[in-house]
Image (cartoon, rainbow, N blue to C red; front, top):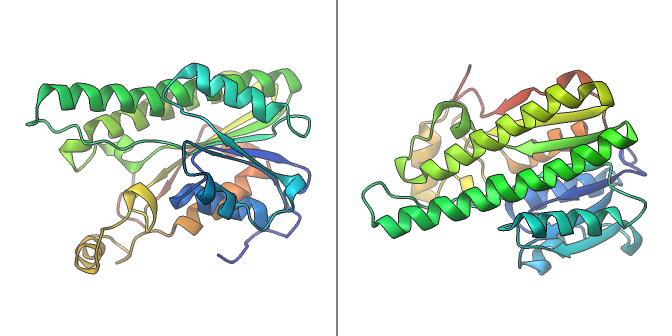
Length: 259
């Protein structure tokens, strides 16, 4: 990915990125590293992937942390660890999420288990982490939270079997909006991104060339949005240069869904 920002645009800022080991999370970590941020790269299990995402940074500018965000306590512990490094966190990027099948016509236990884990990770764990960040930033008088939602949160999912994912992304967007509204006067900026189909990660256009081609034919640009495009926008927002965008949801779907 070619850096969009100046090589020192984020120098001195410490950014915690959840789910930094693969997909768009890894692209985000790479974009932040290219702008010379100090990056706390979180992962659940895939430490090697998180390490690759921040490989360009010197050792003193990167920290790898594992945490299972299926519990709010683990999210709070992750925040404490990140805050203890390099005098605190300036920016939180909430990217980690699960997208589990919750088939309407499937067994009850699959529906129940899928909903439970999706809400635990995408809403309860992410929400607890966002709460910690907002409280710390409000006390300090500045700080930025960037939340990855989804176009499915805006319009409902076109795939009925991932209804839990769509609902969870709507819930975390609403929490972000609530925090933005109530903490703007205390210097806290909260930005929400709602990507459509991406060429990387859990929303990838398809698993093989035929599937990708079929998906792309239904998109206005004729292609999926690049994960690096999302990462570039996040790196810009992390600079704090657009405080007037706090509370806004930025649609990144190549005109396939316009509202």
